[in-house]
Each structure stands twice: as C-alpha cells, then as structure tokens.
Amino acid sequence: MKEEKTFEPRSGFPILLLAFLILFGTIAALIVTQMPIFALLFLVFFIMLFGFFIINPNSSRVMVFFGDYRGTVKKNGFFWANPFYSKKKVSLRAYNFDSERLKVNDKLGNPIMISVILVWQVKNTYKAMFEVNDYEHFVRVQSDAAVRKLGGSYAYDNFDNDGEITLRSGMNEVNHDLEEELRERLAMAGISVIEARIGYLAYAEEIASAMLQRQQATAIVAARQKIVEGAVGMVEMALDELNAKSIVELDDDKKAAMVSNLMVVLCSDRAVTPVVNTGTLNH
Image (cartoon, rainbow, N blue to C red; front, side, top):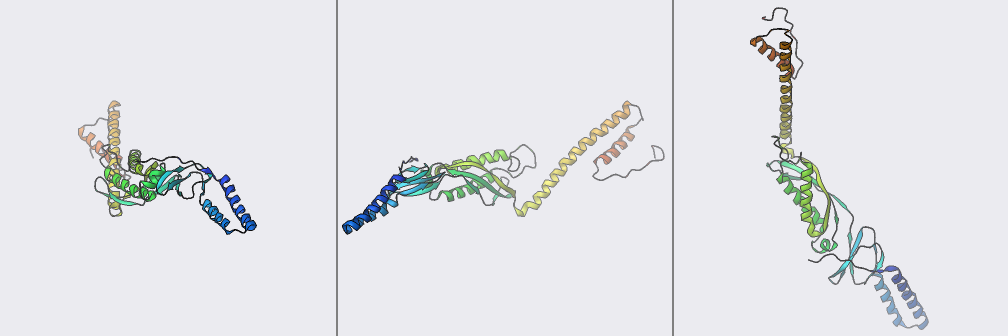
C-alpha cells in the first residue's frame, strides 16, 4: 500500500514574473515584427497560468500526473507546478460531526435512541483520496456502524446494580471503546479520530414511559430501604437508652407495640396524627 509523500513545488512569484514577461514580450514582438507566429506564445502564457495554486493554513493539494501520484503539498504559500498536474484540494482542518439519532437495540434487546459526536481530521492524504471513494461519506457511514455496534454491546441501564458497565453509567469506558472502534474503522481512510463521545442517549419513544416508571420504582425501593435501615437503628437506640437509664420497664409485648408504633412513625411517607393516651399503658 502506498503512503503519503511530500511534494516540493516551485515558488509562484518568479514563474509569475516570467509569465508576464512572456505576455508583454509576445505583444511587443507582434507589434514590431507583425509575424503571427509569435501569437503561439499566448498559448504558452495561458497554459502556464494553470500551474499556479495557493495553499492556505491547514490545507493541502494532492498532485497527480495522468493517474500517477506524485506527492502532497502541505506548505503554505503561493506556488507553481506542472500545469498538467491535477491538484486535488484536501482540507487538514478538524471536522465536527454530529450523527443522526439512530434507533438500535441495546444488549438486553431494548430499543434506544443514540447519536455520536465525532471530531476528526485527515492525516494521510493519499489514503483519504485513493483508498476510499468519498472520505467524508465514509466517516458518516462508519460512524453509524460503530454506534450500532456500541449500542448492542452494552445495556442502557442496569437495574440490578451488579457493577456491570452500561451506556448510562459507564460513560468514560463506553466513550473510550467508541473511540477505539472508530479509529480502527477510519484508519484505512487516513482519518485521525481526535474525540468521540455519545451525544444523545434515551429509550425509544414506545418504551420510554414504561422504563421511566421502572426507574422511579427502583429509586423508591432504594429510598425505602435506606429509611427502614435508619428507622431500625433509631428504634434500637431508643430501646437501649430506655433500658440503660431505667426510665420504664417494658415487657416483650410492650416492646413489640413500641417498636411497631416507632416504625410506623419513622417509615411513613405522610405526617402521622398523634393520639394522647390519658389512661394507663394497658389501655
């Protein structure tokens, strides 16, 4: 496989001066000699004009002579080369690509919507021009393919909390895998991946409502579990304090009633209504 090589063109200013000398000399020769043969020099002048080109910062020109790759010009400035060279322009600037939102199935088979933000630039102009048909279209297609593969490799979310990496919770690991996948896919086109990350992630519309309810239920269960753990600790501390300070003697039935009442008060999601007992503890 051929690799990129550097082409060193001539400076365009001396050749431009020569071209104008030919032009003015031709005009003068025609006026002085009246010989039409000198008109052929006009053809030389116009052919020379096709050899001039300008390279702006972060731009390049791929030089091809009748199908033969001669090299790439990356130096900035005003240059002249063989007028019969085709000078294909290739930008070396960084591109920012935001893919369309794709509907794919995650690892668990749930339909999700996902898109990728990709920052890339051309590093090898030979591969970009001759290894693929259209390198910009190649980037778009391969980005979509990488996103589809990524979506099928991870679950959107993990409700079991077993430490598995998911699209939602493991962004750093997922984005790293996405970058590596894109680098491998785009290397053949001479494309360098600067950054790749997930730009949009959500459940598909048809299951979004159900999954939201599931997430809410999971959050409620987790919150209730913390509340119960805290309530048990508070009840245990209350019984220990009452027993240590001998404030009141409680038998097992009274302890059970007290524990029940405290758990109701501490775990209730609404404000409790106090009931004042004006009789004895047995009533």
